[in-house]
Length: 352
Image (cartoon, rainbow, N blue to C red):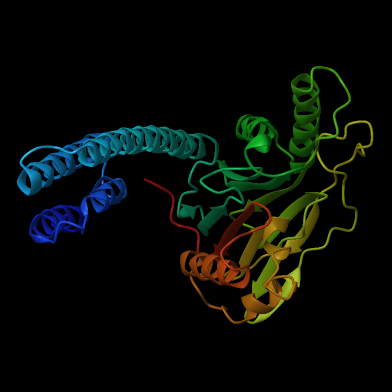
């Protein structure tokens, strides 16, 4: 506030002492203009009123009365102050609305993308979500995990499209997974249930018309007492297994179609089984990670980066990956991105 108040004081003193042909009073309009960058409409109006009082003081001090020129300057200052205060009021309202939108977005993220616990049976877990749209906290990528008996089931998926328009489709799959993960004994049965649920719900969301939406997904099952991971891959990028400094993509021998394409879906949804031993790390991700480009147009080298982070705790690895991905893409992703890291450790002893 020293700048607008100092400007008013300086103009008042200099214009009062200046020769008759020097008029600095019009500069007083800068005071409420500068204040608009510092505060709201009330503060702008207060500084404008102070500047108007200074303009009146200059006119009376120099001539003993207000000339037509000073009257016009005072009127112009009042009008400009009112206009600036109006714009400050509109800006303040927009800021309140943006704060409300951000709060709703944060609540939606907590409801839909519930934070994964740091420990699931023998697994240490970490995750991160990066939305492509500015000010958004959730978009079309998703992940979830569930403990059922001596199993951990994990889902990672990517809705066709990006941003806020795909949130409803993501909610469909997340809701179906959280309910069905505890009801189906086999991973294939779980995947078939997800396909039926997603196909039905997406058809309802489209109003029964032609719907081109679908969701790529990888559904995993990790038993506590077996050093394996079972995967049903429905058109999703393959999980990466980090063992020492070697990265191996878990490629399916019979990949399935994405969820939501019921008329094209295979009926089997057979699970592939891969070794997943103690101290191995499994990285699940969406295509927003591997399709992020740098200024030269090069894709993000995820597998190459992982080899340099061998031995990292899942939480530390995810944090490094997030920072490195944003640095690679210049801080702006072209698509939503989600990452889940799972490291197998020793199973905790059963609770007494």
